[in-house]
Length: 546
Image 1: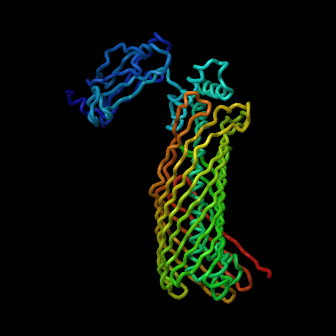
Image 2: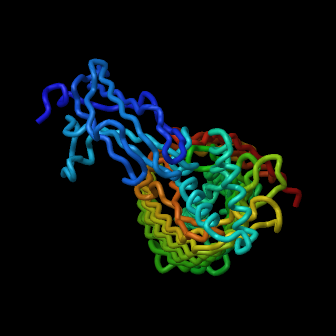
Image 3: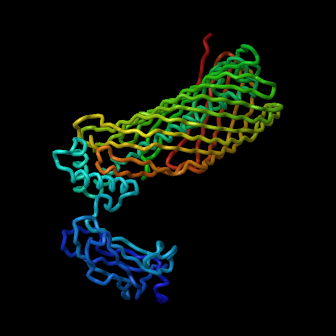
């Protein structure tokens, strides 16, 4: 049993000797560690256990166990026996923070450090998790290619081997940049696009349901709206712009076709950008969604309907890294139940089919452009349930609302191809496994508006505030392998976790004039959204000449 000094051990650090290279029979510089307690003070007379992996990788000159000195330091010397990667681990056994079941004298929680001899690309200092994962796959692929006779290697294999040798010869910054080019983190934009497309279609139908509760019948074109960075302009504002006149003190009218049946067309346009992170390449995007539907009024309190929607999303990756385009077609069924024009409950189910086309740059700056092109498809399913209560006091309208939504998107596996044959980077294309993206969100909010009747039209100042929480769309792993890797080694990259909580705050003013002039000014900002800065100033005017 160890003494009190060992029980106070908190951590062990490397002082000297890491990341060396050597030929078989060569003696490495000493490996030196320092053992510290929770206060950062050195701990004396602590046993340090040394192990070698693989066991035939070399020999330790000292015993497999050494002790720390008065400075908390302990050292060992190693003679390498192979030209391949060797890992020497220094572990403090029976440390105070040890946890788990002990196997072979060592527990999973024991403080330890690793020294790398003849390390590969993935052992380069300063790499993030995704870069290391790609680095291991590149090393495995190149080792397998080097094991083949030169005459038997394909063009793609020779190109991948050349990329590997370039990485091996590079400095840490060059290696990190090269691995980032090989990592398919741009593919994460597919998940962002499909969730945005689902939201666009749901909001188009929600706009229709809101109009129905307000008494819209027949043909309704007032749902066409503008969304900027994922935020929707108030329906009354776009209704005013579409109609260009005030009728009965409100901003909109409809053409009555039959009373029970209704037909509508709603649209959304959004654009924004996402910052670069350690795990994902940033991008600028714009999305358009159009929804055409018909519904039937079963009673004064209930309406059911169906709709078809189309969506397009285009994303341009930062640093000229390529682009992604998604096109989708969606089928929806929806309904609303409301009482006394105050309480309401809305529901929607949706099935969608999406196509994805991706081009990502795999060549370095200064080289001829080479891109990895991919084309795939997938299904998408959504459910949404919302409700609220509107209070009306004269010209003032206000009330709370809430919404619970679930979306699942499936993206099929696919294999990339090089866009330019015979150009450097041809061997860097990947086969990507299928993906599954889940998103479950809850929204709680409130809205208020006030109608001001003027001799020349109607003014409608308005405000809203909402909190949104994401439940299930956590960090994901994307699995891939190099097309020209004879070893078929699979690697994974991880995505960022999405924002869990954020707020939307907006203020606006719309005006509808009796003579066909309408306009609006609206400002909205999103607070506490990670990696995205969003502020909106929205203005517009419309003239009607006939």
